[in-house]
Length: 166
Image 1 (cartoon, rainbow, N blue to C red):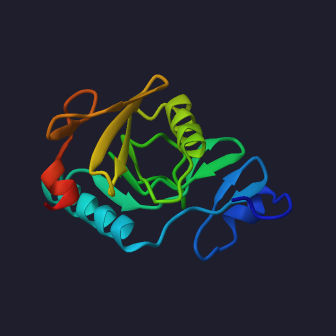
Image 2 (cartoon, rainbow, N blue to C red):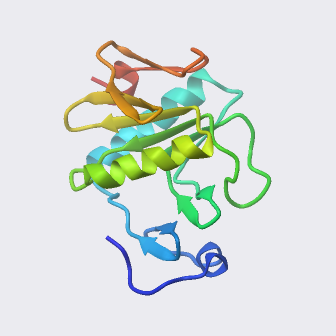
């Protein structure tokens, strides 16, 4: 859902929103966050990645610039190194989106296209309610039927058991 009125990039970057919002071409977009299952899965993913890959930076909901007038907040961003400033301008190694019950598929796909166009090599989508994991690349969202989600170069792996703790 968009919030009313156009906002300048500088105003967005220098304003705190609670909860934080995404910024798309002057429009503030609310995000579907805050439910128990979403937060639980997010914490499982962060813990697993931080424990296994000490050399990576694994952070929740970091403002990430995907285009000149677009800022998204991936649920989890995995970085090789810390950003130079307050927000991320370079593509992360992995952008992870955890679906909420009220997410619309069109909005989900729009974000995936942005991450892809910006050069994010690994885009993962987790559906906590259906226990589905998917990887997005070159316009295609492919469900992973096996037990392991891997980056394109097999550098980072995450298992279903680590994601869902089941």
